[in-house]
Length: 395
Image (cartoon, rainbow, N blue to C red; front, side, top):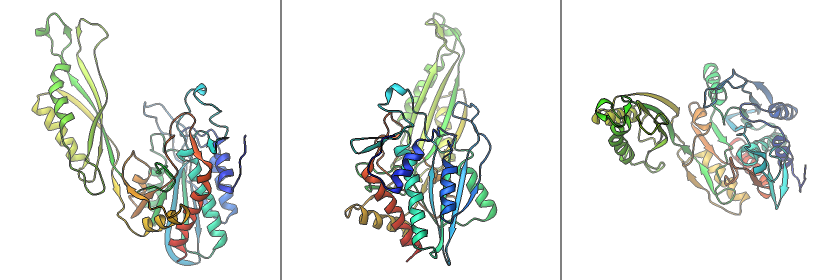
């Protein structure tokens, strides 16, 4: 392992990257983090859950979840730092300049799978929480950390499961920072204060297979679907609002045919996805799709998957505290509030928590070979989290 410079968050980030935690495996990360947090005075609880399935329906292993809480001596809010330790597969080893699970320094950057998404944030959150409670053990309220190994996978037994457990036992959460890599050009330029919802569909258009020379004896599902497809692609689903762009509809896969050039296919499969704003609902989007298909008399079957509902945290005490901390650590930088991008575990915790935002390192290399994080951003990130805790729990 190549070392450079060093602070507590950097050293912990290196340790986490060295753990091969391809989703849903935690690779020993939660045992490492739990031991540290217990030593710092946190009460730790494992909320592991049953195996899930990946996007192709293949069985996946046990999901690990860690809940760590430090209660202060005065009443106050519960502030949660939320992160995931699982990573996407690294892909071909030859695409990397160094082993993806050997943390390596080059040109001021720390390389390794999970460096940006999001083991550095997990390390920074852990160190920030340790430092905060060490300096002020009698703080108000509760400092809590929630780490999961099921964010990059099907997200069935990670934070979704933990939120169900919390709801059943009446757990109160007041503010949550998710450590997703939200920064675009430099650390601190963007805070996510919401995310769009995701709704997917698998449409099977039914036809009648036949010989291309005798089309009158067949029914071509490609031809029958084409007018509906054009209308679906051209439809303006909503206009968005001050926080969200308009809802989008995109085809992710379109397939038909038997592989023979002289056969009219008997069916067509279209897989598609909505990324939708708070101006739309899953029910209304489904109804509109069905209406377009009915208008064009498309015989079909359709299966829907709701991947996540949108959430939004209007500007408030959490975003102000985080923005002030960013300004203090990043030379007066004023972050932009944004709801762009994909989904995160924020969509689950928002069911219980009135204020949920996301903030982390630059996201330029996430899910790529040679994933990296700027070493110079790691200590400021931990300080931003710590300052935010201080504002909310030690006013």
